[in-house]
Length: 253
Ligand code: NAD
Image (cartoon, rainbow, N blue to C red; front, side, top):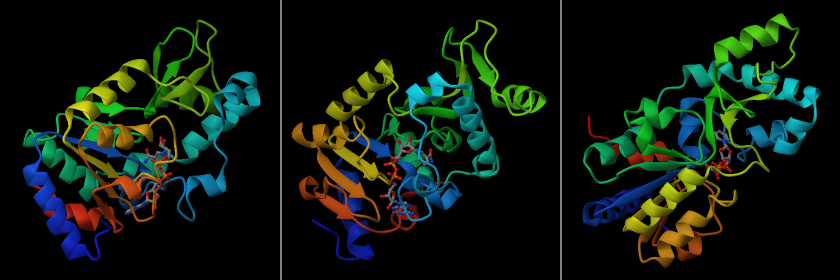
C-alpha cells in the first residue's frame, strides 16, 4: 500500500512499529540529506557531479588516488559539520527502547554512531569515510594525518610505510563487500519481523537484496523514500514523503 498522505503514513507506521518484536532499520543516503550531506541520485546529488571512482581505478594509478583524496577533502566541511537528523534520532529511539538491536546502513557518514547507537551496533555495509585504512596491512590512519601528508606533497596521496595504498575506510564499486558485516546484516534481516528501508534508492547491490530477503522470510516491509523504488510492489507500506517529517513523531528524548 502506498500511503495516500502524511497522516495516514504516520498512523500506519506507528501501528506496525507497536506490533513489531524486532525492527531491522536499513538506511541509505536519503536519511542524511537533511544533515547537509548530498545523496547520490537526487538532482544535484554527488552522482550527477562526479562519477564514483571504481576500486580497480583507485589501485591502478597515483592520479586516481590523488583525485579520490582531493574529492574527500573537498567534502570535509559538510561531513564534519553534519549532525544526526530526525530520521537518525528516531532510529536511535527504537534502539534505546530495545526494539532495534542494530542498524544496517549503506552510509559512510558516521551519523548513526553520532545519534547514540554504539559502534558495534552500526552495521556498515559500505564502510566509513571518517578514517582511512592501508589496503596492504590494514593499519588505521586518521584523516588529519593523510591531509597533512597530502598537502605537504603538493596533493599527492600518501602510501603506508608497508608500501600499501591508503584509502578511506569505504567500500568502492568493485571492491569486495565486508564479510562480517554482510553476515550480521543477513542475520538481523532474518531475525526481524519489521524491516524499515529508509532513504535508499535500493539500486546498489548486494545491499539492495536485504529488503527482499526480509519480505521472503515473512517480515513486514516498509519503504520510506521520496522516489519510487523497484521494491515498492512487494512492500506492505510505501511512504513517499520526507524522511525527517515522517520519523520525527518517533523521536523519544
Ligand atoms: P541514493 O542516492 O541512491 O538514494 C537516496 C534516495 O533517498 C533517493 O531515492 C532520494 O529520492 C531519497 N531521498 C533523499 N533525501 C530524502 C528525504 N529527505 N526524504 C525522503 N527521501 C529522500 O543512495 P543509496 O541508496 O544510499 O545508495 C548510494 C550509495 O552512496 C550508498 O552505497 C552509500 O554508500 C553512498 N553514499 C553515502 C552517503 C552518506 O553516507 N550520507 C552519501 C552519498 C552516497
